[in-house]
Length: 116
Image 1 (cartoon, rainbow, N blue to C red):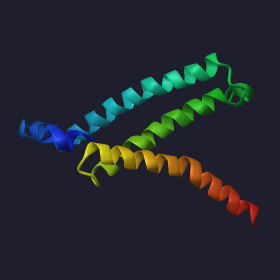
Image 2: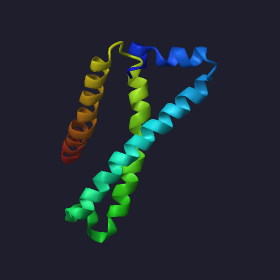
Image 3: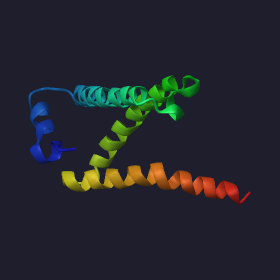
Image 4: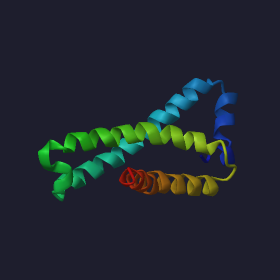
């Protein structure tokens, strides 16, 4: 998201790098950083023996969810970066969107299910 402020994409494109290679390399680097952090989350779940995540061999499913979340969240961040000019505003919008999608929408869907 900071590339608009620093102009790193424009510099790399002027040096002859294709747009496809630029976005693929950024995605892979961001995904590797995410996997590094997510692996610590899985390790902490195992070390602290959180029963709701490790009973009935659920740790593998939690790992798959971590991997899939990264594959969904990174393109969402890229998409949101096109709507803002400043880095701080885009970070706040993504934070609010993540909170609303992960907290408020499940509560809303659960509440609608109770009315049936």
